Image (cartoon, rainbow, N blue to C red; front, side, top):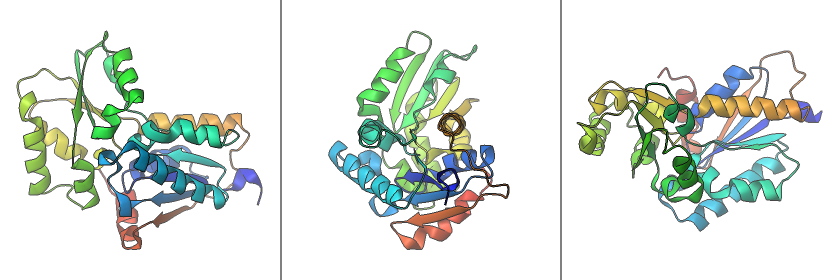
Length: 257
């Protein structure tokens, strides 16, 4: 197979990266994608840095062994923890990460306060801290660690009382704050966008980094001469470290949210 017609590898700690995958398949509909979710070890956002790095390297090594032409690390935690290590290890391979969309939120004309929802490890990491600091002069950037939220999404609590109860408690300190934007800093969180909006208690714009990651993937494939020559629609193949989650992968890929 010509290198340009090989699949694009996708990696996430579980199901969350499917939200990024959807943005990429919409922008690049003729590309083939191979998605691996490590649901057996989810959530990554509450593990140690060393554990996340080890799991991420193992997963990406496996995708590369399967002949992918590029890799998207569709996990904010894994990107923060391991993207530099991956690029050092595979310097000739396009490797695209994802980061919270703090910049567009902070620079929006009507933005004074931005609430960033992310996993505890993402918020602790130097990569995120530098990102937040870079825009703190343009908006009040509030970092909100969401312990357990990604796990609830993995368990299927998208629009139920369990999710509502969790979010109401999480947002309680911000009931009377003026927040114009919520940034979803974990790829699991877009699947509960409507629940977040409903439980926040005031009008708010909600954004994530999926579209930006898709555009960056396209730019890197173009620069490397790796855009597919296939004319027919591309295929998406799902794999998961918990095979019983494959039906859930397909369900989320087709979910309206």
